[in-house]
Length: 291
Ligand SMILES: [Mg+2]
Image (cartoon, rainbow, N blue to C red):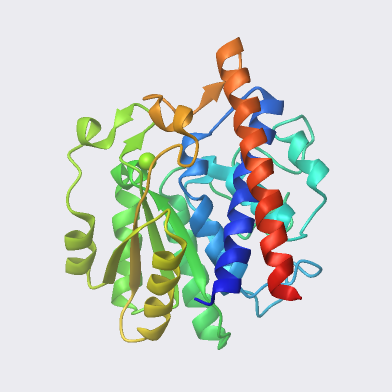
């Protein structure tokens, strides 16, 4: 990845992370951990790889994104707002009555959302169907699917993976967000987590594992997946739940949190200041590349 692109993606990631934190702080509760773990993956996708038109969200040739772990809606909304799909003010309506941004993603409510998800496991089948439909229609577009490690407790995921592998839907790129935790604690304590690379490979996927917070590693893996047109593609994201903000990384039960005490409010304000400073710094660097 060129340095200028890396810088642009890094800036997008910082903005997404800031927006996620700001919107949840404003709401007073929400799914922080699993939204933050996906920030870099979303930044690399929308900052470099995704084919989209924010002015025409239903453009037929667009790449599709299915956030099967629909509770991570805040990372999707922050990304879409930064990419111009809707005004940023909408972020502060998260979960309000009548909002266009419900807690879990809904394709009928939000421009840029391609699948209604949140009932865990179901998005994997939606993505499989979308990818097969695109292939049958001869539309040369990618379907990017994000599934949680805890979500893999759902048997439906494995039916969908079998389908994607059997049909060699190489343009359906499956990202497993391996952030080691789920709603009730560590995945290793809830249900023994097998080796995802071994498992997906045995299903017939070309499987890669990368540091999911590393922009260059993510880009390399997506490029390699795009080059592989002979088999289905899976990228296991080795991530940290709550990534990028130490306080949220260190709270064990960080799946969904409440902003209901002075400590979390103070930590959040400090983190927002740090992120704003970082954004200003990166904006200067990006502008310098443009000159
Ligand atoms: Mg998880």
